[in-house]
Length: 318
Image (cartoon, rainbow, N blue to C red; front, top):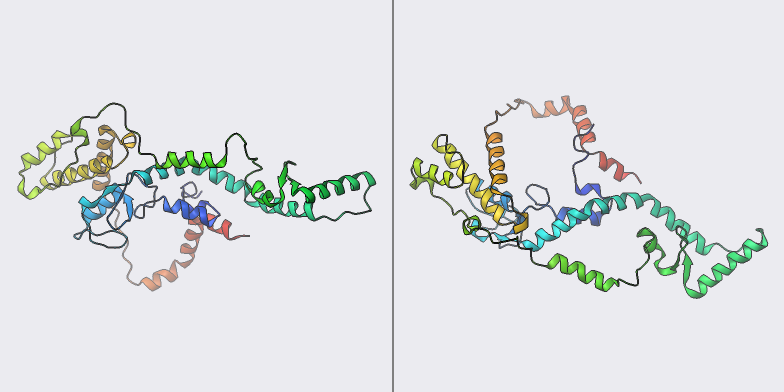
């Protein structure tokens, strides 16, 4: 069984437009949906934690996409993008299901709709059926309406394909499209909802950059104790722990209030990070001749690629 089969990916969608939409909702660094997105002065957006970690790992602070010079102080939360990504995540499963369910039948339905409109009257059929068919076709031609071949509802001839593509949905007179579109945009563009009550001022204060060279070990331990973090380990461990905590804390503040994690959740994230950081690393095998290695394992590489991209094979088949 392919371990990546259930991982959400833009290639889940057969349509190029929906793939592009799904890709646009993802961070260019981690390829996951934006989590607390922030924007730089150049206009590019990333997950707050992703871009903070990338900037901290490089000697020169630049945008990961265009390499324009930047600083951590230029990071600005993007609540509109965060809200739109949340709406897309909530609707994604339903859209994907409708897309997959209607991909093949739509072609057949379109063919049926064309045949139902353009079939000429025949004299070989029974007189009663022929006359009724002729009557419906003539009425449709005169009024511009045709019977849907799927649900049999009268639909404007110019809208028959769109009607079938939508799963035979009929317009609702009580909820005009303009009002619906307006309400949807109001939901997307509205400012993020504020949480109940007022949080403590200290919980909304960002952790400033710390010059660890000017601090003693005792002072660094006090910084960790302030947030209830463990203060054990050598100096390099203490510095790394506080540096990672500052990134987690500040990135959390870049999220909408009702999307922020609790202190306990942040501490758990820090614990996972330390565990992964200190886990023994597997030694990579040394390859002396890369060309010979590729030839020897060529068949294995092909099998791995085939297992990793099962969806691509299905999409390419007409």
